[in-house]
Length: 303
Image (tube, rainbow, N blue to C red; front, side, top):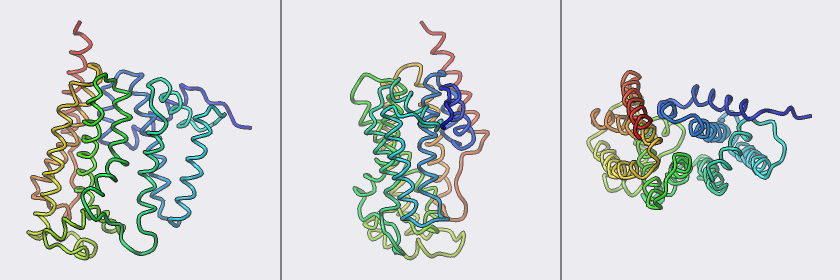
């Protein structure tokens, strides 16, 4: 018999997952009012579970895909009201109802997680031919998260949806730049093949390179082009901020500031993403969070 779990217990589990795993995200979560913070933590825990199922390299791609499909089916049953002892399902079901999150968006989120598993079965590296192809991937794995988040943050102007989509692309392009070396070790190159060709950079030079060797001038130019695209999409984040509810803006500001700071560190390293993995120092994150909390206090004290 499944043991019943209370909603408070479910949200507590999701908060613990977010605090342990979320890193950049969690600093923004803290700046949200409690009901919205609970919902965001639930969505994060849902994403984390999907990612963990997808990334378990101790089993084959086919088995990981089957596991994800079974988990997805279980979620659909829970979403329809079936009894479940899964605290993440309990919390996400409540958050979706409370903040009018379409279940289709959560399905797209899972579709993004499975896209890597379906990309190139076998030994062929995972690649994207064009930036349009990469944009679709970024939409599924990051923009969809943004579209879910703005429903929790609150908004009324429909223009917020396209801006949230492009903000997600900015975040994912930042992740892609940071993780070029790590992804290559796993047989994944998210830099579009058309961009590699335009900069006379071979796929093999990304996939098979000496450990921690700095980029060539051509590789730096390639990575800088991706960085410029990301910078352009961060402009959408600035336009999104005033469109969401006032009490959620500090959290959004914290999240954008931390991610943009990560891109700036990559830029300041002249796009050397091979010698070491870029990160935003904890002291800088705390400084950004402190500024966000000050913004939140001002909002709460304002009439």
